[in-house]
Image 1 (cartoon, rainbow, N blue to C red):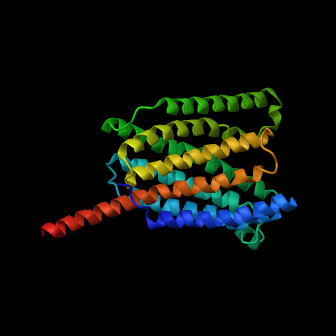
Image 2: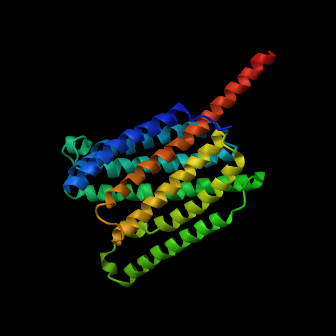
Image 3: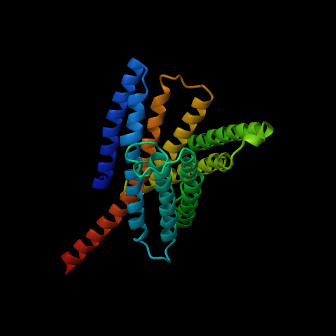
Length: 301
C-alpha cells in the first residue's frame, strides 16, 4: 500500500508548482520579447526566497529526524551528516541567493555594507558550501545507509539498466576531468582557489549518483512505505542535482540553444524540494509508528 504524503511534503510541492507557474510565465515572455528581465526578477526575488525557505525546512526536519534516534544507533550519525549537509546548503543559499546579490531585501544592501568587491567573495563561499562541502557530508551519510542496508541484507542487486546508468555517470565524470586537465595544461596563473575546490564537485556528484542508484534499488525492494519514500526523495534530489550539473556543462559548451537554456535553471528548484521532502517522510514515519503503538496499547489496555 502506498503511503500518503505528509502535509509538509504537499506544501513543499504546492509551493514549487506555484513558483513554476510564475517562472514559466516569465519564460514565455522571454521567448516572445527576448527580455531576460522578468526571468531574472523571478529568480532574484521569489526564487531566492524559495531556495532559502525550503532549505530551512530541510534543516528543521533533518534535525527532528536526527532526534528520533539514540546517539548509539547507526541512523543517528547518518542523520547528523545529512543535517550538516543541509546546513551547508542553507548557508550557501544565504550567501549565493541573498547576501551576495544586489537585491532590495538583502540585509547588506539595507545597511549599505555590500562593497563592490564583496559580492564575488560571498558568492564563492556560497558555491563551495552548496557544492563540495554539502556533497561530501551527504555522501558520507548515504554511505552509512548503504552499509547498514548491506548488514540487514536489504541492499538490492543492480540491474543492467542501473549498471548502464552508472557507466554513463563515470563517462561523464571522466569527460569533466579531461576539461580540468585542459585547464591545468593551460594558463594556471588564472586559476582561483574557488575553481580548484569546485573541481571536487564532479567526482563527489558521481559518487552520490552511484549511491543514489543503489539506494533506489533497495527502496524498490522495501515497497512504498514512508521510510522507503524518504530515501527515494533523497535519491531524486541527487538525480536532479546531477541533471542540473549536466545542463550547466552542456550550456557552457554551447550544446543548448539560447531560447531553451533558461528552462534548465528550473531544475535546481526540483532538487532542493526533493531534498527537503526526504526528512519530512522520515519524521512522518516515526509519528505514525508512535500513533500506531499508542493505539495498540489503548486497545489492549
